[in-house]
Length: 258
Image (tube, rainbow, N blue to C red; front, side, top):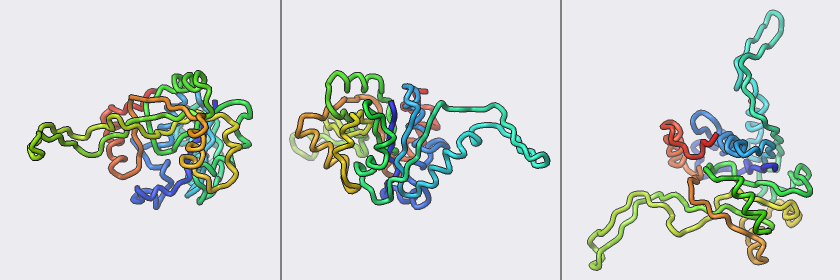
């Protein structure tokens, strides 16, 4: 199965970083967050990636162009004009980077990668700024069993604020909970399994995947939701980045399954 990763947005809510680089290139533990996503997918033998580039896409191309050399020990012999690699580290990846335009919407970006998809196979589609410990094998199995055109991963959003519960007088605190999760609230967490013919529904770069395609599929009873109760976190803000970095640095990163 191939994976398509969105990596072209502006990331305005974390502009402290994205004025210099595309959002998927923001580092967690010294590695771009897109690398973390790819490593987790590779654990499930998804090793062919199609990356939808847009804003500052050349930085993604430069990163992967130099990926091998950055992950190996190397000797540069300037006298003999030779380069020798030692202790080569290599991921079994095939990475295709496609310029899908700076102004394209989340659905519209799929137009430019259409020819790189297998005509008769579903593909994984996700955002380049969210990490999770989701079991991809279970997700795919669920998708096949339910026979829908698209399966999305439903997650509980991580809590950003503490919650209060009051006694009957509405002024005495009965329960204080710090940073509760989303409880019974389910949201779209990405990690879609998409049948190839769904891409044929997209005919314009302004098409928004979430409001146009998913809404239409839901009305036609063609959208399934795989409920993931484990870890999921987006990197929308500088605070999100700091939380993810803290988890990584303290060896508590749930998405590190490799």
